[in-house]
Image (cartoon, rainbow, N blue to C red; front, side, top):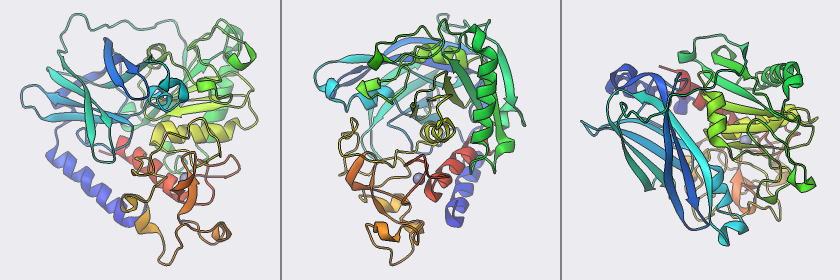
Length: 426
Ligand SMILES: [Zn+2]
């Protein structure tokens, strides 16, 4: 984090804790989970409530609750029903939103399970969910008056799933808690899952800035049992009965491994306090996916698993964009280059001052030519966010671009560090 940014960040944190409320003024030590359905097509986005649950642990942040980092395609607010004051805000992204840019969404309407969670409120609140229009503008999609004493708020939880601590260095309130969930591990595979979780957790902690903050990171392994070993591969007509029903070939993309069973996934994660969900799939096939502030999912046994794990966690934990681009990617309609994307590590140059512009050395060519890629570590290289033209990335290479890059670029590292501080600083 550059010095001016870090000073500004500390100032914001100090302001929010000075003027902001205390956690215990408005919340109890449990989580409230909202299960809903995103419904629509390429142009329509609607939300329909499924159910509300009270979960046993709140693993998220305890401070600066009414500030956010302006990340995600969607966000939600909680307003205290008496004062009208905002008492919590958070951003998130959704598989539904990615699907909206696929050709299928122009021909049909679909629904996708989605969940959000927040600390369980003491008093009645208004929940508002909004969709991002651009960097600073939002459209309201859903509003709900939530009474925390509503008798139909469900309190069921799973009881027969074993949980093992992989690493725990600090109490949950001060930690980034990561719930690693087994997917495609049959009962006979349980010890393999613990070993895989340990291996991939240790690998994550060798990458900056996770290494620097590893004493703030707790990792739990949740050994969900699948009927079958392995995960579904629709492109080969292989369907498996697994804990969260994940599959490759999401949106007909062979390497894109996701799950749409969001409610089941949250039921499993709720066994521990958590800030982040990591789903480990018991397969050798290359693939993965990561959705901001929801989950990352990767193949445990592929030879590139250690690299992909870090890449996908960059998406789900810090809202980093893919810095790679292809000539004909299935997701090539994801970004409108007339708008500044919200992700911290790509820019359309429309509002570059909101990104890493202040850190680029004077005289750096825009776009920065490939021939300068060794000399210029932080520039404005064209290509990123699946687009070859009109979108730019900070460094020639980065873990968000290729598996060969040893680390995140400095802009990505700064974004991850900002999130770690946001979730753990008081
Ligand atoms: Zn990067």
